Image 1 (cartoon, helix red, strand yellow):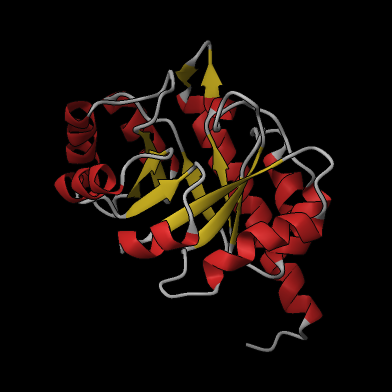
Image 2: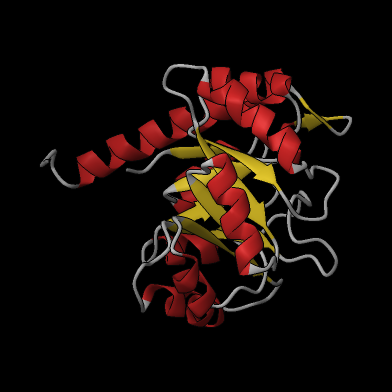
Length: 230
């Protein structure tokens, strides 16, 4: 179902509560080197807080080239709903993991649609396929959360071929336009909902509200194009 909103980089109970109250579908916990990294103990507390709520968001653990066993142990201990792989993990690695996966692909400036498609396609050539591919902007030193944007025109082409979550530099002020241009399955944000390096509840609410409204406009537009057929 299109219209998924993922808020990533949760670090405190206040973060996850504010994100859940804002209406996020997925909350991301980072287990890779990052200012947003959480320990297993911290993550367990965040998961406990989230799961006390009715209609709790799904919990996503983000890893970057971590050993298979480490991911499986962490995901199992925390009962994560989804694992996000944000490094150079192969299609064979995804298959061996046997967990619902979002596979991140970082797009370099100037990279062509064909080149990106060639990197994505192998993940969908074997079962189990990822839940989605997340497109993010490439940074030479950081795996994500940089606030850099990618080519939305390129993303729009790929969104017609794969279940795609758009990331990379999205903010409450830009997410609606991104959705209307790309028409993705979902959107993902981390730095764009921070103020002074901390998650900002008002920015979370604004981001989710703008994304929801844009997804609704896209759905109405799609219905109009199809003549209202179910």
